[in-house]
Amino acid sequence: MKILVCISNVPDTTTKITFSENNTQFNTTGVQFILNPYDEIALARAIELTEGGNGSVTVINVGEVNTEPTVRKALAIGATDAVRINAKPHDAWFVAYQVAQYVKANPFDLILTGRESIDYNGAKVGGMIAELLDLPSVSIIKKLEIEGTNVTVEREIEGGKEVLTMPLPIVAGCAEGVAEPKIPNMRGIMSARTKPLTVVEPVEIKTHSEVISYETPAPRGQVKLVPADEVAKLVGLLHEEARVI
Amino acid sequence: MPVLVYAENAEGKFKKSTFEAISYARAIANQNNTTLTAISIGNADAAELAGLGKYGAEKVLNVSNDKLKNFVNQAYAAVVAEAAKKEGAEIVVLSNSFSGRGLAPRIGVKLEAGVADGAVSLPDQSNGKFIIKRLAFSGKAYALVELTSTNKVISLSPNSYKVVETGSTAVVEDFNPEVKASDLTTIIKEIVRSTDKVSLPDADIVVSGGRGLKGPENWGMIEELAGLLGAALACSKPVSDSGWRPHSEHVGQTGIAVSPNLYIAIGISGAIQHLAGVSSSKVIVVINKDADAPFFKVADYGIVGDAFDIVPKLIGAIKEYKALA
Image (cartoon, rainbow over all chains, first blue to last red; front, side, top):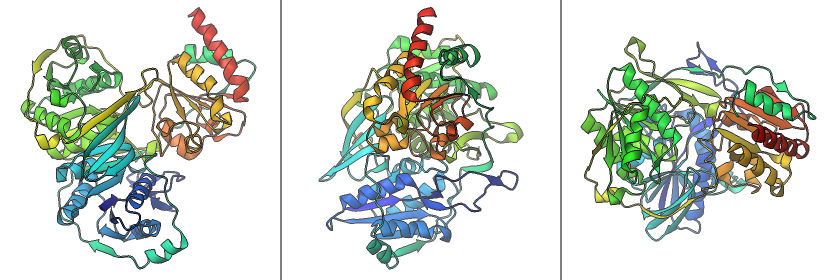
Protein backbone atom coordinates (compact mmCIF):
# COMPACT_ATOMS: atom_id res chain seq x y z
CA MET A 1 0.00 0.00 0.00
CA LYS A 2 1.53 3.29 -1.15
CA ILE A 3 -0.06 6.27 0.55
CA LEU A 4 0.49 9.94 -0.26
CA VAL A 5 -0.32 12.55 2.38
CA CYS A 6 -0.53 16.18 1.26
CA ILE A 7 0.75 18.49 3.97
CA SER A 8 0.51 22.20 4.47
CA ASN A 9 2.67 24.60 6.46
CA VAL A 10 0.36 26.91 8.47
CA PRO A 11 0.54 29.48 11.28
CA ASP A 12 0.21 27.98 14.76
CA THR A 13 -3.37 27.93 16.06
CA THR A 14 -2.59 30.47 18.79
CA THR A 15 -1.38 33.05 16.24
CA LYS A 16 -2.93 36.49 16.38
CA ILE A 17 -3.51 37.26 12.72
CA THR A 18 -2.19 40.64 11.49
CA PHE A 19 -1.40 42.08 8.09
CA SER A 20 1.22 44.41 6.65
CA GLU A 21 1.82 46.52 3.53
CA ASN A 22 -1.58 48.13 3.57
CA ASN A 23 -3.30 44.84 4.47
CA THR A 24 -2.01 43.07 1.39
CA GLN A 25 0.42 40.68 3.12
CA PHE A 26 0.00 38.27 6.01
CA ASN A 27 2.41 39.42 8.69
CA THR A 28 4.64 36.44 9.48
CA THR A 29 6.81 38.30 12.01
CA GLY A 30 7.05 36.22 15.16
CA VAL A 31 4.66 33.61 13.79
CA GLN A 32 5.44 29.97 14.48
CA PHE A 33 4.57 27.71 11.53
CA ILE A 34 3.31 24.19 12.11
CA LEU A 35 2.10 21.11 10.27
CA ASN A 36 -1.60 21.72 9.55
CA PRO A 37 -3.54 19.96 12.36
CA TYR A 38 -5.89 18.11 9.97
CA ASP A 39 -2.93 16.92 7.89
CA GLU A 40 -1.47 15.47 11.11
CA ILE A 41 -4.62 13.37 11.43
CA ALA A 42 -4.28 12.19 7.81
CA LEU A 43 -0.61 11.37 8.40
CA ALA A 44 -1.40 9.45 11.59
CA ARG A 45 -3.98 7.29 9.78
CA ALA A 46 -1.56 6.67 6.88
CA ILE A 47 1.09 5.49 9.35
CA GLU A 48 -1.41 3.18 11.07
CA LEU A 49 -2.46 1.67 7.74
CA THR A 50 1.12 0.87 6.76
CA GLU A 51 2.26 -0.42 10.15
CA GLY A 52 4.31 -3.61 10.18
CA GLY A 53 5.93 -2.97 6.82
CA ASN A 54 2.57 -2.93 5.03
CA GLY A 55 3.56 -0.23 2.56
CA SER A 56 4.94 3.30 2.67
CA VAL A 57 3.83 6.85 3.44
CA THR A 58 5.09 9.71 1.31
CA VAL A 59 4.33 13.28 2.34
CA ILE A 60 4.15 16.00 -0.28
CA ASN A 61 4.25 19.74 0.26
CA VAL A 62 4.12 22.62 -2.18
CA GLY A 63 6.30 25.22 -0.59
CA GLU A 64 9.55 27.08 -0.64
CA VAL A 65 12.59 26.02 1.37
CA ASN A 66 11.21 27.60 4.57
CA THR A 67 8.58 24.82 4.85
CA GLU A 68 11.25 22.14 5.31
CA PRO A 69 11.06 22.08 9.14
CA THR A 70 7.37 21.13 8.76
CA VAL A 71 8.23 18.47 6.17
CA ARG A 72 10.91 17.08 8.51
CA LYS A 73 8.36 17.03 11.34
CA ALA A 74 6.15 14.77 9.20
CA LEU A 75 9.16 12.50 8.63
CA ALA A 76 9.86 12.47 12.37
CA ILE A 77 6.24 11.46 13.04
CA GLY A 78 6.76 8.47 10.80
CA ALA A 79 6.45 9.24 7.07
CA THR A 80 8.77 7.10 4.93
CA ASP A 81 9.92 9.84 2.59
CA ALA A 82 9.01 13.34 1.49
CA VAL A 83 8.60 15.42 -1.63
CA ARG A 84 8.72 19.20 -1.70
CA ILE A 85 7.55 20.97 -4.81
CA ASN A 86 9.66 24.05 -4.78
CA ALA A 87 7.12 26.83 -5.25
CA LYS A 88 5.07 29.36 -3.38
CA PRO A 89 1.59 27.78 -3.01
CA HIS A 90 -0.18 30.40 -5.09
CA ASP A 91 -3.76 29.09 -4.90
CA ALA A 92 -5.55 25.76 -4.45
CA TRP A 93 -5.59 25.12 -8.19
CA PHE A 94 -1.84 25.68 -8.42
CA VAL A 95 -1.12 23.36 -5.49
CA ALA A 96 -3.51 20.63 -6.69
CA TYR A 97 -2.07 20.76 -10.20
CA GLN A 98 1.49 20.32 -8.94
CA VAL A 99 0.50 17.37 -6.73
CA ALA A 100 -1.54 15.75 -9.53
CA GLN A 101 1.40 16.05 -11.94
CA TYR A 102 3.63 14.31 -9.42
CA VAL A 103 1.07 11.52 -8.85
CA LYS A 104 0.67 10.95 -12.60
CA ALA A 105 4.35 10.06 -12.74
CA ASN A 106 4.38 8.30 -9.33
CA PRO A 107 1.04 6.56 -8.68
CA PHE A 108 -0.32 5.94 -5.18
CA ASP A 109 -3.05 3.65 -3.81
CA LEU A 110 -4.50 6.26 -1.51
CA ILE A 111 -4.15 10.04 -1.32
CA LEU A 112 -5.03 11.77 1.94
CA THR A 113 -5.30 15.45 2.78
CA GLY A 114 -6.57 17.26 5.84
CA ARG A 115 -10.20 18.36 5.55
CA GLU A 116 -8.92 21.91 5.11
CA SER A 117 -5.92 24.04 5.99
CA ILE A 118 -6.36 26.28 9.01
CA ASP A 119 -5.00 29.34 7.16
CA TYR A 120 -7.03 29.59 3.96
CA ASN A 121 -9.61 26.94 4.99
CA GLY A 122 -10.00 26.09 1.34
CA ALA A 123 -10.90 22.41 1.51
CA LYS A 124 -10.30 22.53 -2.24
CA VAL A 125 -6.94 20.88 -2.92
CA GLY A 126 -8.14 17.28 -2.34
CA GLY A 127 -11.17 17.57 -4.61
CA MET A 128 -9.11 19.26 -7.32
CA ILE A 129 -6.41 16.57 -7.21
CA ALA A 130 -9.13 13.91 -7.50
CA GLU A 131 -10.73 15.64 -10.46
CA LEU A 132 -7.37 16.07 -12.21
CA LEU A 133 -6.65 12.36 -11.72
CA ASP A 134 -10.25 11.27 -12.38
CA LEU A 135 -10.51 9.55 -8.99
CA PRO A 136 -13.36 9.43 -6.45
CA SER A 137 -13.05 11.94 -3.62
CA VAL A 138 -14.69 12.38 -0.26
CA SER A 139 -14.35 15.55 1.75
CA ILE A 140 -14.52 15.64 5.55
CA ILE A 141 -14.25 12.01 6.52
CA LYS A 142 -14.45 10.81 10.13
CA LYS A 143 -13.33 7.22 9.62
CA LEU A 144 -11.32 5.27 7.05
CA GLU A 145 -10.89 1.50 6.78
CA ILE A 146 -9.30 -0.54 4.01
CA GLU A 147 -10.26 -4.07 3.05
CA GLY A 148 -8.34 -5.50 0.12
CA THR A 149 -8.72 -3.05 -2.75
CA ASN A 150 -11.76 -1.34 -1.26
CA VAL A 151 -11.96 1.59 1.08
CA THR A 152 -14.83 2.37 3.44
CA VAL A 153 -15.16 5.90 4.78
CA GLU A 154 -17.59 7.68 7.02
CA ARG A 155 -18.47 11.12 5.79
CA GLU A 156 -20.11 13.91 7.72
CA ILE A 157 -23.44 15.20 6.38
CA GLU A 158 -25.70 17.89 7.84
CA GLY A 159 -27.28 16.33 10.91
CA GLY A 160 -25.79 12.88 10.47
CA LYS A 161 -23.30 10.67 8.70
CA GLU A 162 -22.96 8.53 5.62
CA VAL A 163 -20.95 5.35 5.16
CA LEU A 164 -19.48 4.99 1.69
CA THR A 165 -17.40 2.35 0.02
CA MET A 166 -15.39 2.55 -3.19
CA PRO A 167 -12.42 0.97 -4.94
CA LEU A 168 -8.94 2.38 -4.39
CA PRO A 169 -7.36 4.72 -5.29
CA ILE A 170 -9.31 7.66 -3.88
CA VAL A 171 -8.61 11.10 -2.42
CA ALA A 172 -10.02 11.74 1.07
CA GLY A 173 -9.99 14.78 3.37
CA CYS A 174 -9.41 13.70 6.96
CA ALA A 175 -11.07 15.29 9.98
CA GLU A 176 -11.09 14.49 13.68
CA GLY A 177 -11.99 10.91 14.42
CA VAL A 178 -9.95 9.37 11.59
CA ALA A 179 -6.91 8.98 13.86
CA GLU A 180 -5.24 10.53 16.87
CA PRO A 181 -2.27 12.70 15.84
CA LYS A 182 1.07 11.10 16.66
CA ILE A 183 3.87 12.77 18.60
CA PRO A 184 7.36 12.19 17.19
CA ASN A 185 9.66 10.19 19.47
CA MET A 186 13.43 10.63 19.77
CA ARG A 187 14.13 7.83 17.30
CA GLY A 188 11.77 9.43 14.81
CA ILE A 189 13.39 12.83 15.23
CA MET A 190 16.86 11.37 14.69
CA SER A 191 15.86 9.31 11.66
CA ALA A 192 13.98 12.25 10.08
CA ARG A 193 17.31 13.89 9.34
CA THR A 194 18.40 11.07 7.07
CA LYS A 195 15.09 10.14 5.44
CA PRO A 196 14.86 11.04 1.73
CA LEU A 197 13.44 14.48 0.91
CA THR A 198 13.16 15.01 -2.84
CA VAL A 199 12.85 18.54 -4.18
CA VAL A 200 10.90 18.80 -7.43
CA GLU A 201 10.66 21.95 -9.54
CA PRO A 202 7.07 23.10 -10.25
CA VAL A 203 5.24 22.90 -13.55
CA GLU A 204 4.32 26.32 -14.91
CA ILE A 205 0.57 26.90 -15.05
CA LYS A 206 -1.81 29.83 -15.15
CA THR A 207 -3.45 30.48 -11.79
CA HIS A 208 -7.15 31.26 -11.36
CA SER A 209 -7.26 33.45 -8.30
CA GLU A 210 -5.31 36.08 -6.45
CA VAL A 211 -5.60 37.39 -2.89
CA ILE A 212 -5.91 41.17 -3.28
CA SER A 213 -6.03 42.13 0.39
CA TYR A 214 -7.14 41.07 3.85
CA GLU A 215 -9.52 42.44 6.42
CA THR A 216 -9.87 41.75 10.11
CA PRO A 217 -13.38 41.54 11.57
CA ALA A 218 -14.72 44.75 13.11
CA PRO A 219 -14.26 44.71 16.88
CA ARG A 220 -17.43 44.03 18.83
CA GLY A 221 -18.84 46.52 21.29
CA GLN A 222 -18.48 46.02 25.00
CA VAL A 223 -20.27 43.09 26.60
CA LYS A 224 -23.56 43.87 28.30
CA LEU A 225 -23.51 41.99 31.62
CA VAL A 226 -26.74 40.69 33.11
CA PRO A 227 -26.66 40.07 36.89
CA ALA A 228 -26.71 36.37 37.82
CA ASP A 229 -29.88 36.81 39.86
CA GLU A 230 -31.76 38.46 36.99
CA VAL A 231 -31.39 35.79 34.29
CA ALA A 232 -34.85 36.54 32.83
CA LYS A 233 -33.49 39.93 31.73
CA LEU A 234 -31.24 38.15 29.26
CA VAL A 235 -34.23 36.58 27.53
CA GLY A 236 -35.81 40.04 27.23
CA LEU A 237 -32.64 41.51 25.73
CA LEU A 238 -32.29 38.68 23.22
CA HIS A 239 -35.89 39.14 22.17
CA GLU A 240 -36.31 42.91 22.16
CA GLU A 241 -32.83 44.31 21.62
CA ALA A 242 -30.88 41.69 19.70
CA ARG A 243 -34.01 40.21 18.05
CA VAL A 244 -32.51 36.75 17.81
CA ILE A 245 -35.21 34.80 19.64
CA MET B 1 -24.07 34.79 -19.51
CA PRO B 2 -26.54 33.12 -17.14
CA VAL B 3 -25.71 32.16 -13.58
CA LEU B 4 -26.19 28.55 -12.46
CA VAL B 5 -26.96 27.61 -8.86
CA TYR B 6 -26.79 24.10 -7.46
CA ALA B 7 -29.94 23.55 -5.38
CA GLU B 8 -28.98 20.94 -2.82
CA ASN B 9 -31.74 18.89 -1.27
CA ALA B 10 -31.86 16.55 1.68
CA GLU B 11 -34.23 13.66 1.00
CA GLY B 12 -36.18 15.70 -1.52
CA LYS B 13 -36.51 18.85 0.59
CA PHE B 14 -34.59 22.02 -0.10
CA LYS B 15 -32.91 23.61 2.87
CA LYS B 16 -32.47 27.15 4.12
CA SER B 17 -28.84 27.17 2.96
CA THR B 18 -30.07 26.36 -0.56
CA PHE B 19 -32.50 29.28 -0.46
CA GLU B 20 -29.64 31.50 0.69
CA ALA B 21 -27.50 30.27 -2.23
CA ILE B 22 -30.32 30.91 -4.73
CA SER B 23 -30.99 34.40 -3.31
CA TYR B 24 -27.27 35.15 -3.52
CA ALA B 25 -27.03 33.79 -7.08
CA ARG B 26 -30.09 35.91 -8.03
CA ALA B 27 -28.29 39.02 -6.79
CA ILE B 28 -25.22 38.12 -8.89
CA ALA B 29 -27.45 37.55 -11.93
CA ASN B 30 -28.97 40.99 -11.30
CA GLN B 31 -25.52 42.55 -11.06
CA ASN B 32 -24.79 41.14 -14.52
CA ASN B 33 -28.25 41.69 -15.94
CA THR B 34 -28.65 38.03 -16.76
CA THR B 35 -30.80 35.00 -15.92
CA LEU B 36 -30.55 32.43 -13.16
CA THR B 37 -30.96 28.70 -13.64
CA ALA B 38 -31.04 26.24 -10.75
CA ILE B 39 -30.08 22.60 -11.00
CA SER B 40 -31.49 19.95 -8.71
CA ILE B 41 -30.35 16.35 -8.66
CA GLY B 42 -32.55 13.53 -7.43
CA ASN B 43 -35.67 13.13 -5.35
CA ALA B 44 -37.38 16.54 -5.21
CA ASP B 45 -41.00 16.58 -6.39
CA ALA B 46 -42.53 19.04 -8.86
CA ALA B 47 -43.92 21.43 -6.25
CA GLU B 48 -40.60 21.61 -4.41
CA LEU B 49 -38.80 22.29 -7.70
CA ALA B 50 -41.19 24.99 -8.89
CA GLY B 51 -40.92 26.54 -5.42
CA LEU B 52 -37.32 27.49 -6.16
CA GLY B 53 -38.72 30.23 -8.37
CA LYS B 54 -39.73 32.06 -5.21
CA TYR B 55 -36.08 32.92 -4.59
CA GLY B 56 -35.37 34.09 -8.11
CA ALA B 57 -34.58 31.05 -10.26
CA GLU B 58 -36.25 31.43 -13.68
CA LYS B 59 -35.58 27.88 -14.71
CA VAL B 60 -34.94 24.68 -12.77
CA LEU B 61 -33.10 21.81 -14.43
CA ASN B 62 -34.31 18.62 -12.83
CA VAL B 63 -32.10 15.57 -12.97
CA SER B 64 -33.93 12.48 -11.86
CA ASN B 65 -31.85 9.43 -12.54
CA ASP B 66 -31.94 6.43 -10.24
CA LYS B 67 -28.17 6.17 -10.36
CA LEU B 68 -27.99 9.68 -8.90
CA LYS B 69 -30.42 9.16 -6.04
CA ASN B 70 -27.65 9.57 -3.50
CA PHE B 71 -24.87 12.12 -3.47
CA VAL B 72 -21.72 10.94 -5.23
CA ASN B 73 -19.15 13.65 -5.48
CA GLN B 74 -17.68 12.70 -8.85
CA ALA B 75 -20.99 12.14 -10.66
CA TYR B 76 -22.76 15.19 -9.20
CA ALA B 77 -19.83 17.44 -10.12
CA ALA B 78 -19.99 16.11 -13.70
CA VAL B 79 -23.73 16.81 -13.91
CA VAL B 80 -23.45 20.36 -12.52
CA ALA B 81 -20.56 21.14 -14.88
CA GLU B 82 -22.60 19.76 -17.82
CA ALA B 83 -25.51 21.96 -16.83
CA ALA B 84 -23.23 25.00 -16.66
CA LYS B 85 -22.02 24.26 -20.20
CA LYS B 86 -25.55 23.70 -21.47
CA GLU B 87 -26.72 27.01 -19.98
CA GLY B 88 -23.59 28.86 -21.02
CA ALA B 89 -23.17 29.84 -17.37
CA GLU B 90 -19.87 31.44 -16.46
CA ILE B 91 -20.71 31.64 -12.76
CA VAL B 92 -21.72 28.62 -10.69
CA VAL B 93 -22.97 29.18 -7.15
CA LEU B 94 -23.40 26.57 -4.45
CA SER B 95 -23.70 26.37 -0.72
CA ASN B 96 -20.54 25.74 1.29
CA SER B 97 -22.18 22.71 2.88
CA PHE B 98 -20.46 19.38 3.44
CA SER B 99 -21.52 18.30 -0.06
CA GLY B 100 -20.80 21.71 -1.56
CA ARG B 101 -17.23 21.51 -0.32
CA GLY B 102 -16.80 18.26 -2.16
CA LEU B 103 -18.34 19.57 -5.35
CA ALA B 104 -16.90 23.09 -5.71
CA PRO B 105 -13.27 22.06 -6.34
CA ARG B 106 -14.25 19.33 -8.83
CA ILE B 107 -16.57 21.68 -10.74
CA GLY B 108 -13.80 24.28 -10.66
CA VAL B 109 -11.40 21.92 -12.42
CA LYS B 110 -14.01 20.79 -14.96
CA LEU B 111 -14.83 24.38 -15.92
CA GLU B 112 -11.25 25.65 -15.55
CA ALA B 113 -12.71 28.08 -13.05
CA GLY B 114 -11.29 29.87 -10.06
CA VAL B 115 -13.09 28.78 -6.91
CA ALA B 116 -14.00 31.12 -4.06
CA ASP B 117 -15.31 29.03 -1.21
CA GLY B 118 -16.75 30.27 2.04
CA ALA B 119 -17.87 33.51 0.36
CA VAL B 120 -19.48 36.02 2.74
CA SER B 121 -20.36 38.83 0.34
CA LEU B 122 -21.52 39.55 -3.17
CA PRO B 123 -18.73 39.96 -5.71
CA ASP B 124 -17.30 43.41 -6.17
CA GLN B 125 -17.30 43.81 -9.95
CA SER B 126 -16.22 47.45 -10.13
CA ASN B 127 -13.16 48.20 -12.32
CA GLY B 128 -13.83 45.10 -14.38
CA LYS B 129 -12.60 42.84 -11.60
CA PHE B 130 -14.42 40.09 -9.75
CA ILE B 131 -13.49 40.18 -6.08
CA ILE B 132 -15.06 37.97 -3.41
CA LYS B 133 -14.71 38.37 0.33
CA ARG B 134 -14.24 35.03 2.03
CA LEU B 135 -13.38 33.77 5.47
CA ALA B 136 -9.73 32.97 6.10
CA PHE B 137 -7.52 32.03 9.01
CA SER B 138 -10.39 30.05 10.49
CA GLY B 139 -12.56 33.10 10.90
CA LYS B 140 -9.83 35.30 12.39
CA ALA B 141 -9.81 37.36 9.17
CA TYR B 142 -11.25 37.76 5.68
CA ALA B 143 -9.37 37.47 2.41
CA LEU B 144 -10.48 39.45 -0.63
CA VAL B 145 -9.86 37.12 -3.53
CA GLU B 146 -9.94 38.10 -7.18
CA LEU B 147 -11.10 35.34 -9.49
CA THR B 148 -9.10 35.91 -12.66
CA SER B 149 -10.48 33.04 -14.77
CA THR B 150 -13.40 33.46 -17.20
CA ASN B 151 -15.50 30.86 -15.39
CA LYS B 152 -16.05 31.19 -11.67
CA VAL B 153 -17.30 28.93 -8.91
CA ILE B 154 -18.51 30.45 -5.64
CA SER B 155 -19.63 28.57 -2.57
CA LEU B 156 -21.56 30.63 -0.06
CA SER B 157 -20.90 30.42 3.65
CA PRO B 158 -24.10 29.50 5.57
CA ASN B 159 -25.97 32.37 7.27
CA SER B 160 -23.98 35.01 5.41
CA TYR B 161 -26.62 36.05 2.87
CA LYS B 162 -30.26 36.50 3.71
CA VAL B 163 -33.03 34.60 1.99
CA VAL B 164 -34.85 36.97 -0.37
CA GLU B 165 -38.23 36.03 -1.77
CA THR B 166 -38.86 37.57 -5.18
CA GLY B 167 -42.17 35.81 -5.68
CA SER B 168 -41.56 34.71 -9.26
CA THR B 169 -42.17 31.21 -10.60
CA ALA B 170 -39.75 28.83 -12.21
CA VAL B 171 -40.10 26.65 -15.27
CA VAL B 172 -39.05 23.10 -14.47
CA GLU B 173 -37.23 21.31 -17.26
CA ASP B 174 -35.93 17.73 -17.27
CA PHE B 175 -32.22 17.39 -17.79
CA ASN B 176 -30.71 14.00 -18.54
CA PRO B 177 -26.96 14.20 -18.97
CA GLU B 178 -25.09 11.01 -19.58
CA VAL B 179 -23.42 9.66 -16.44
CA LYS B 180 -20.16 7.75 -16.87
CA ALA B 181 -19.98 4.41 -15.06
CA SER B 182 -16.51 5.38 -13.83
CA ASP B 183 -18.07 8.34 -11.99
CA LEU B 184 -20.34 5.98 -10.07
CA THR B 185 -17.93 3.62 -8.32
CA THR B 186 -18.89 5.02 -4.91
CA ILE B 187 -21.54 2.96 -3.13
CA ILE B 188 -23.54 4.41 -0.26
CA LYS B 189 -23.85 1.72 2.37
CA GLU B 190 -25.64 3.63 5.08
CA ILE B 191 -27.11 7.05 5.79
CA VAL B 192 -27.73 7.91 9.42
CA ARG B 193 -29.70 11.09 10.01
CA SER B 194 -30.55 12.17 13.51
CA THR B 195 -33.85 13.80 12.66
CA ASP B 196 -34.37 15.17 16.15
CA LYS B 197 -31.19 17.23 16.00
CA VAL B 198 -30.66 20.60 14.37
CA SER B 199 -27.77 20.56 11.89
CA LEU B 200 -24.84 22.51 13.30
CA PRO B 201 -23.28 24.23 10.26
CA ASP B 202 -26.46 26.02 9.17
CA ALA B 203 -28.22 26.43 12.51
CA ASP B 204 -29.78 29.79 13.42
CA ILE B 205 -29.01 29.29 17.10
CA VAL B 206 -26.18 27.26 18.61
CA VAL B 207 -25.91 26.27 22.27
CA SER B 208 -22.39 25.22 23.14
CA GLY B 209 -20.88 23.74 26.28
CA GLY B 210 -17.33 23.59 27.58
CA ARG B 211 -15.23 22.10 30.32
CA GLY B 212 -17.10 24.20 32.87
CA LEU B 213 -19.87 21.61 32.68
CA LYS B 214 -17.56 19.15 34.40
CA GLY B 215 -18.76 15.96 32.68
CA PRO B 216 -20.96 14.40 29.98
CA GLU B 217 -23.63 13.58 32.57
CA ASN B 218 -24.37 17.30 32.89
CA TRP B 219 -25.34 17.78 29.25
CA GLY B 220 -29.03 17.21 29.93
CA MET B 221 -29.64 20.87 30.74
CA ILE B 222 -27.67 21.98 27.66
CA GLU B 223 -29.84 19.71 25.53
CA GLU B 224 -32.98 21.02 27.17
CA LEU B 225 -31.93 24.61 26.54
CA ALA B 226 -31.07 23.83 22.90
CA GLY B 227 -34.37 22.00 22.47
CA LEU B 228 -36.34 24.98 23.77
CA LEU B 229 -34.57 27.36 21.41
CA GLY B 230 -34.60 25.00 18.40
CA ALA B 231 -30.82 25.26 18.52
CA ALA B 232 -28.01 22.98 17.43
CA LEU B 233 -25.68 21.55 20.05
CA ALA B 234 -21.97 22.27 20.04
CA CYS B 235 -18.97 21.96 22.30
CA SER B 236 -15.39 23.13 22.76
CA LYS B 237 -12.34 21.06 21.76
CA PRO B 238 -11.43 19.79 25.26
CA VAL B 239 -14.97 18.44 25.57
CA SER B 240 -14.81 16.43 22.33
CA ASP B 241 -11.19 15.41 23.06
CA SER B 242 -12.34 13.96 26.40
CA GLY B 243 -15.07 12.03 24.60
CA TRP B 244 -17.88 13.82 26.48
CA ARG B 245 -19.45 14.79 23.16
CA PRO B 246 -18.91 13.62 19.56
CA HIS B 247 -16.28 15.31 17.37
CA SER B 248 -19.05 16.39 15.01
CA GLU B 249 -20.16 18.92 17.66
CA HIS B 250 -16.75 20.50 18.13
CA VAL B 251 -16.69 24.11 16.94
CA GLY B 252 -13.56 26.20 16.66
CA GLN B 253 -10.45 26.52 14.57
CA THR B 254 -9.94 22.78 14.18
CA GLY B 255 -13.62 21.94 14.32
CA ILE B 256 -16.63 23.34 12.53
CA ALA B 257 -16.77 27.09 11.98
CA VAL B 258 -20.24 28.41 12.69
CA SER B 259 -21.92 31.74 12.05
CA PRO B 260 -25.39 31.53 13.61
CA ASN B 261 -27.56 34.48 14.57
CA LEU B 262 -27.10 33.53 18.21
CA TYR B 263 -24.24 31.61 19.82
CA ILE B 264 -24.60 30.75 23.50
CA ALA B 265 -21.34 29.61 25.12
CA ILE B 266 -21.69 27.94 28.49
CA GLY B 267 -18.66 27.13 30.62
CA ILE B 268 -16.25 27.89 27.76
CA SER B 269 -13.38 30.25 28.60
CA GLY B 270 -12.80 31.34 25.00
CA ALA B 271 -9.37 30.19 23.86
CA ILE B 272 -8.22 31.91 20.66
CA GLN B 273 -8.81 28.68 18.70
CA HIS B 274 -12.41 28.48 19.89
CA LEU B 275 -13.10 32.15 19.20
CA ALA B 276 -11.75 31.70 15.66
CA GLY B 277 -14.55 29.32 14.82
CA VAL B 278 -17.43 31.31 16.31
CA SER B 279 -16.49 34.98 15.95
CA SER B 280 -18.64 35.51 12.87
CA SER B 281 -21.77 34.72 14.91
CA LYS B 282 -24.09 37.72 14.90
CA VAL B 283 -24.84 37.72 18.64
CA ILE B 284 -22.71 35.97 21.27
CA VAL B 285 -23.92 35.20 24.80
CA VAL B 286 -21.39 33.95 27.34
CA ILE B 287 -22.17 32.26 30.65
CA ASN B 288 -19.06 31.65 32.74
CA LYS B 289 -18.20 31.85 36.41
CA ASP B 290 -14.81 33.42 35.67
CA ALA B 291 -15.40 37.14 35.08
CA ASP B 292 -11.94 37.33 33.45
CA ALA B 293 -12.67 34.63 30.86
CA PRO B 294 -11.46 35.94 27.46
CA PHE B 295 -14.83 35.06 25.93
CA PHE B 296 -16.45 38.06 27.66
CA LYS B 297 -14.25 40.35 25.50
CA VAL B 298 -16.00 39.24 22.32
CA ALA B 299 -19.46 38.62 23.77
CA ASP B 300 -22.48 40.85 23.25
CA TYR B 301 -24.22 39.67 26.41
CA GLY B 302 -22.82 37.87 29.41
CA ILE B 303 -23.69 36.44 32.78
CA VAL B 304 -20.94 35.88 35.34
CA GLY B 305 -22.08 32.85 37.26
CA ASP B 306 -22.01 29.11 37.68
CA ALA B 307 -23.57 27.23 34.76
CA PHE B 308 -25.31 24.87 37.18
CA ASP B 309 -27.08 27.84 38.74
CA ILE B 310 -27.65 29.98 35.61
CA VAL B 311 -28.72 27.43 32.98
CA PRO B 312 -31.75 26.06 34.92
CA LYS B 313 -32.84 29.66 35.58
CA LEU B 314 -32.40 30.47 31.89
CA ILE B 315 -34.46 27.41 30.93
CA GLY B 316 -37.19 28.59 33.31
CA ALA B 317 -37.11 32.12 31.88
CA ILE B 318 -37.35 30.86 28.30
CA LYS B 319 -40.26 28.60 29.18
CA GLU B 320 -41.99 31.59 30.71
CA TYR B 321 -41.24 33.74 27.66
CA LYS B 322 -42.55 31.00 25.37
CA ALA B 323 -45.73 30.68 27.39
CA LEU B 324 -46.30 34.42 27.00
CA ALA B 325 -45.24 34.66 23.37
